[in-house]
Picture 1 (cartoon, rainbow, N blue to C red):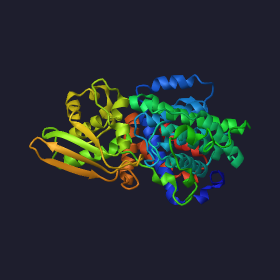
Picture 2: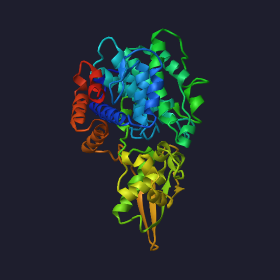
Picture 3: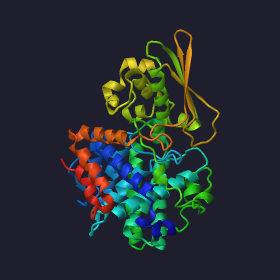
Picture 4: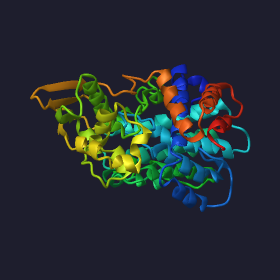
Length: 444
């Protein structure tokens, strides 16, 4: 607790500050791109009914809502396309709950929050959420991006409030009382999935409000008899949570997503693209088999179907892998209702299969291997030992910028928004008002 409340911007190394800036920019751009999602209008309508106020802005337009409602909508938009950054080892989209809560807090504060304060809050919120995910030693049973996200969001807001250790302990206790997230939404590919992360962002603000009001909360929120770990994880090792604090900053371990689909599909997409470059085509492919760890099977090995909706399709490796083989990439355009029912792509997806490899780590994304059996009887196999966008195989600055530009252009057109956003994020360490980073990604 003292690490979170005592850490200041000067204590955070440049590598962690730079990572926080990079993933904040990615999250904001992806959040803007989420504006056209089919259920977004309904989400905004519901959130708008939660009270009066215009404290904070919503990504992609000029709408203002109460801070908690704005955090809810922005987190939803950041995750609804499955394009947001992720901590692979923690198996959690930690920035997606933390950033909307922290930004909403910046906007509703009476006195401006400076850029150093925001970046410190983001780094520490990500640290808390990631470490909780890293402590787990069993497969997912609850939707971890939401169940750890609420703690990260609450911690980030508490840092911005200047909470001492006692107040932060209450803040996390109130976060425990609101923690939720079911994997059933993932299993069925329902839009409830991003709503769960949205709920975590909103609850982070509520937890801080309750703590600030002096309302007592559970003190042993993590390892208590009915604390986080016993409620949400089948097995865990919390002993290592504080080991190495300040040595490895978890924000530097986040991964960019190069494609708008479940992270667990990305190793397979990379393998498909390698096979395609090696001459495998829809015409000569008889069968493709993905050998992957258990986590990949749990998250994205599911049958494609003509009636699948967009949320299901983004979590279906057979569909996105078939798109990659047919088109040479996977983009936002591939998830329209018309594209999801493309008989050619669905026919190719029907040739995809999967098998478990020998990896037992419940959080492992690699190694993977794809084997293409061709119609002439030959086979070609490619290994995937690192997922593109991960710390082991990072996207370069140009690729990150191109992704952000594409997300913004889909809503605003032109390239000026991307340029202004990049400048605003870059200038955060010297900015007297961190909320101005939202200017390029809100408004008409």
